[in-house]
Amino acid sequence: MTTKPKDRTFARKLCSEHAERNDNLSWFEALYHKARGDETIIPWADMVPNPQLCDWHRRTGFDFQGKRCLKIGCGLGDDAEYLASAGGSVVAFDISPTAIEWCQRRFPDSSVTYITADLFAVPPAWHGAFDFVLESYTLQVFPPEMRQRAMRCIGDLVAPSGTLLLICRGREESESPGAMPWPLMRRELQSLLGFGLLEFSFEDYSDAENPPVRRFRVQYDRAT
Ligand SMILES: C[S@@+](CC[C@H](N)C(=O)[O-])C[C@H]1O[C@@H](n2cnc3c(N)ncnc32)[C@H](O)[C@@H]1O
View 1: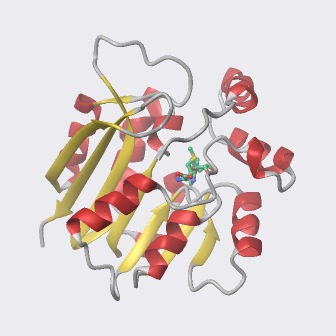
View 2: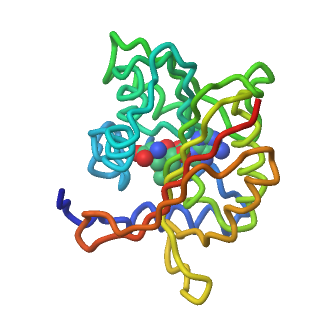
């Protein structure tokens, strides 16, 4: 699939304005709010499920039937709906209340439970509660100093015998991170292993975007 390059100028401006005030989280709500229902303003809103998720699912045949699934930073809901259509019992959350209302408007008959929540302060009942956790593209919009804590929070959501699928931009240590979204280095992801997860597969590839984007797609499993 070839897609048009996204204009990230406005999102980057909001991101850096908020970062100057030592606030790396509230620009998401500001962006969704300012978009006023126009998805073209949201650079990550493709309005279709993430092909990196769909390809992985097709290839692995992962069985979502009856599984408790959690989508982190669900944006406008396409991946959450995909997991539900594959048979998962899905909770999807985002820090932005406007994004959550948008999902509820887009998918009024959805079986997905959409909730406003902050990854860094999730409801206690979510700890170790999900058979499948999907993290795609949230870590890469956090500055590096927030990522270790974010990964600890993510790992903590996975139930015994559960699976975490992580999809992000990837780069070499010698490469500059450039502008947001900031690609991750493989070494940064190693810390998830310290949080009780085992790396089942690690893919490092270029996708079909125009220009192609280097991605890491990693499946982690938690031991029983
Ligand atoms: C780059 S977007 C990716 C959205 C979606 N995963 C996708 O691929 O379209 C990151 C999303 O994470 C949300 N987010 C950022 N920080 C968060 C946090 N601390 N807790 C929950 N969601 C967060 C943002 O509002 C945004 O919707």
